[in-house]
Amino acid sequence: MSTKTLRLAAALFVVAATSSTGSALAASQTSELNVRLEIQSGCTANLLEGATLDFGQVAGTPTNDIQRSARVSVSCSGYKPATGPAAVAPTLGLGYGLHADGNQRNVQSGTNKVPYSLYKNGYYGDAWGLAGTGSGGPLTINNLTNDTPQEVTIYGVVKKSDITSKPVGVYTDTVQIVLTY
Image 1: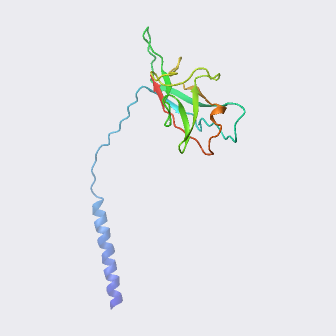
Image 2 (image 1 turned 135 degrees about the vertical axis):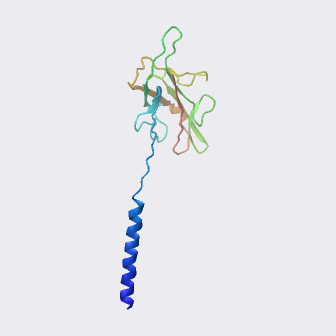
Image 3 (image 1 turned 180 degrees about the vertical axis):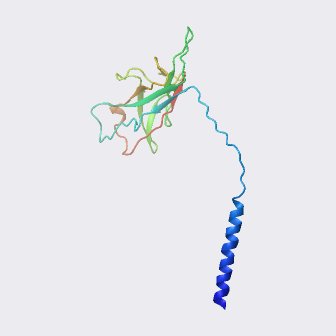
């Protein structure tokens, strides 16, 4: 008798579950989902994939200054260059980094610093900075056109004399890139 009772209880449960599921699917309600996208004009400056200004590994005192470069891609969408006598071209400025002493950039390991400089050209004669911050200034980006990325190279140098007697370590810094348009 207990076997029959269990089967009957199981059969009643299946019927009850089917009945309640069937009635839950009989009604529906309609609503709306609002979807929005706003595209604005604007410009961005991005390091190209894998780009890092890496001065490499040094053992002892190098025989020459260490010179390296990194590339930045500047692109705009919906950008319309200003025209007329007061028109100003976009500029790309570089901050002085997390470990700067005034306008002197430094890579740092612990409390030890090694100075380095950033330049707008490969002959290392035009220092790169921010507008109104002392030596150097931002790079003017002429001929920037809509939706056509323009590559800009950042040149860096560490003077060999600044590496002498520095402790072993990995020296790093982070520099802010400021695009003004």
